[in-house]
Amino acid sequence: MQKAIIRESLPDRIFLLFIYLMLILILISVAYPLIFVISSSFSSSSAVIGGKVWLWPVNPTLNGYEAIYNYPEILKGFLNSVFYTVLAVLITVSLTVLMAFPLSRPNLPGKGIWMYALLFAMIFNGGLIPFYLVVRDLHMINTIWSLLIPGGLNIFSVLVAKTFFQNGIPGELYDSAQVDGCNDFRFLGIIALPLSKPILAVLVLWAAVGQWNSYFNAMIFLNNPDLFPLQLILRKILILNNVEMTSMTLSPELLLKFEDMKNLLKYALIVITSVPMLLLYPFAQKYFVQGAMIGSIKG
Amino acid sequence: MEASERPQRYHRKGRTLGRKIAMNWQLYVLLVIPTSFLVLFNYLPMLGAQIAFRNFNPIDGIWHSPWVGFDQFNQFLNSPYFWPILKNTLRISLYSLGVGIPCAIILAIAINEVKHVRFKKLVQLATYAPYFISTVVMVGILQIILNPSTGLFGQFGHALDIKNPYDMLGSPGAFPSVYVWSGVWQETGYAAVIYLAALSGVNPELYEAAKIDGATRIRKIYHIDLPSLIPTFTVLLILGVGGVLSVGFEKVFLMQNMLNISSSEIISTYVYKVGLIDTNYSFGVAVGLFNSVVGLILILIVNTVARKISNASLF
Image (cartoon, rainbow over all chains, first blue to last red; front, side, top):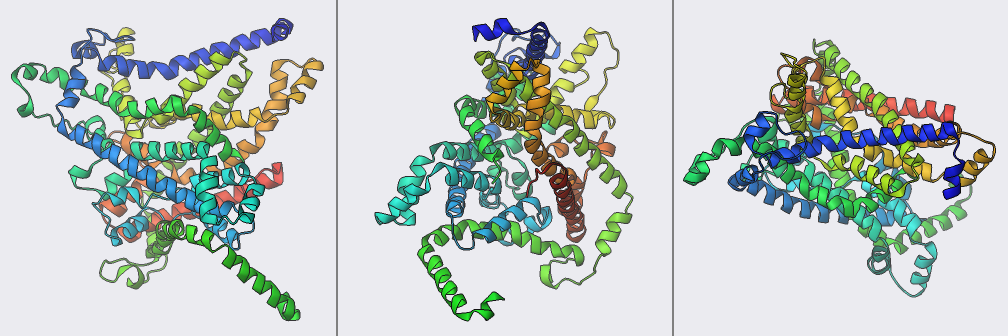
């Protein structure tokens, strides 16, 4: 290593310097907007509006977060989203494994039909309205099932999981298990799944991030506000600028901070919504990279 | 065909096939539930898309509404909205593809050049993070930062003593750029991972040989790294081109407002408004189907061309 560095030629060193500078610039431009929003959420609203926040919080307060605490709609949406995310993970991961495992077995008669059906569905679809009509005819409109069932099968996940099962579980293992009288159900449950922890982690994370961050299905399928996931409430507050903070629920001393809180609400809300996924992610990064790599292998 | 000539063999083959199916019955049991999802939510809507050729009314339903042939399509192709929204859709998606793919490749190659492990990890961790932010939050951040009076962008304007800072989110001219570059900010780190995976598969002997031949880093990138990225690049390009007409509804819809609508109305947002909001189902489906069919044709064309030129293709 040491030697290699000494042997770098001058043009190479200049080039490397350029690469490092570029990456540092990219680092700053990726991180800065995030730091700005986080710092603003902890600053006083006068500092935020007056443009005094550049990097670190100015006149630190927690008013934005208190505003969230006093906004029942947000709390409810948060809990709804947690609930939907847990269910969506269970449903999507089960469906993925059930589809991917049989298709990963070599010599399964009819396997080709399934593979073509999956690939075709990936590059062609009937469009939004027929999809909506199917969900409507199944009487799922305005129920939580509309968020979980119609999007439950993720074809891309199935193909990635299938590739994993195919390459990650040796065929000899299956043969010897069969000799020992192990059937397919038991093989999947006792041998294949315990060997598939990395891919299961990837599937769980994809499903969780997808459900937590989505708003579209909720927007078209739900009109009962009690069922709204967090992203839909966020849309109302962040995008449509529709803040319904009633001072009714606030105590007198909080009333003074009312305007202050209203201004900071958006910043705090962005932080609160993104934190669960961002916390998940450093632990998950290893698996995400693995998943993307499996996905990039053709087959 | 062969079977009629050699009936006996066919018979035996049929029996083994039947036995094979019977032996694997448990695997088919596993497939039942996910396959019904596939049929219900992917293939049933394709059948439902036939209402594009009918004049849908709720009483007669999908199968019995009067047949009108290509009327809905003609109506769409001749409507004054057709060219503007097609142009908007293509502008946004080709701009995204043209900027997004090179950015991801450049980032992947740059990260690959770094030998300092900690710095490498830090860059990957940071550039990857925005991918986990939801579309709603992304657009919310854009609104906060680009707000001409209170946002960061406005503050820069004040600092530079510009009297009337530009309202980026309310300007049709800026819309495609705001859309594309915020997408680059959010997704490049994620997209680069796939290229990094391809780079990590390069045979190290190639670099050794290049080093012995006295190749500079730039030459190694040009002669080793870039060619090794071509298969990945081709597959992603095919998928991207196939999706040019179905560019992400979610973000465009959230970024739309009365001021920028002339450049932000795209096919998918139009389908949503005409079809679901105005409940003009047949017309909406026709527009959506136009979208899907053009996408499919484009994928097939690009795939064939790619297979001929570079031997790398999706299928």
